[in-house]
Length: 323
Length: 256
Image 1 (tube, rainbow over the protein chains, first blue to last red):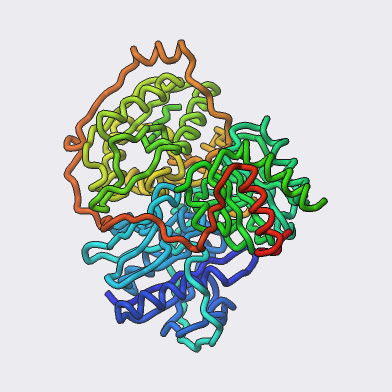
Image 2 (image 1 turned 120 degrees about the vertical axis):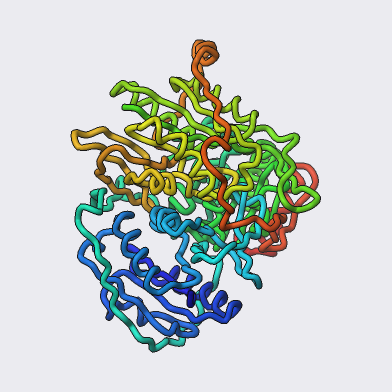
């Protein structure tokens, strides 16, 4: 068993941010444990991603190459990483907590008799890993037991991508053995449902609504507030799942990421899947009947109360202030 | 198609979460319990597949006595029969340990398809279905919204990040983890509730399904989340709070 292996994931937009955040987590873990840091990515050794590594440089990079890995499949990735891990014998393997990682890493970990320590928000002496339970209402500290490799995924935005300092490292090519018949699924090209007509990313003010609004019949009340504020309407996933608002107005990990000047969260409890999509907003206001709702952890202003009383009062107050 | 749906009973979303004095777990005594929502979507997909193609829907759930009420709910919605893995200390197992129990119960059934929700609302691990696929030696796909039966097996619609999707073709048997929102959930009818009482509900003790392996990840303690911002809670009546908020948004935060 040797070091800390940080795995890169190719993003559709070419962004290296989540890789750099995962590297930052890897640096923290390496310094806590005194282990060396290495990086791995699917692709060519001259792949741009290795040149974008910042912070304390990993001592080695592993470029995993195989024609069958050009398109992501869980079967292909599990085979490739299983072979790389058996060769390198890392003590810790860190991934970004992405949909793709959730798709294949639990299966990869099971090959080693391990489970993924998923969606980690902090790493402390021990090492102890922090993650959330009950939709963000409780923090848990967990520990890896035994001698086997420890698989960890890092929550988006939990670690700061270090300021770029560039790192020279030794990049080695790794060619796993994969046969076509070992890949059982046939993935199609990614597509979007419809041309996205709503770009919440450029909105200055957003009123986000959640389960607390109880039904689609209460939307006009929320729209009146949005109208008074000059805000766009957005929603958490359950609202769109129920068909109360279109999917394209969903904010969160499966929807859009927004950072308006004002985000007013109405009846949104604040599950992590929603928070990752809006916690970068300049000013967050939460209106919720539950004083322990996790939305209040990221809010600048909060009103604990019945939203059906607070929202109309707020609409009137905004109108009055605007004269 | 013979379909096994793995469902989990979790604390009701609106139930207050209180941390026990020893900070090891939450207080469970006064909790209300409900079916994990993504699992409800998995059940719905299974029932619709059965309505289209015939076959059988078997629900499978692990946990103590109380889990029976969630299993009855699934039977009332239309599942044909159920298996309850009785275990009072499921929390002592990690996701691999729980998946081993489920896999041991699924194997003798030889299903064409195994469905479960993409994650649970309590632990949020999102791993059980994927590990199940590995233990059963079957192909899998996650975050699935729609399932279509084809000549060769299945064509499924998978959700990717940021509003993207893809179709995946795969052979049967297979394991899928379902995302919420793909279907409209049905309610149990009175007739369904009545019928559920006569349906087969087989209980198996966890100990009969194989020895327990030591967990590789253990929970040390739990705590209330730390505040990331210092929130100003505005009190008073709705009208008073609204007036103060507008004033603060104008002069303090300067976002109006």
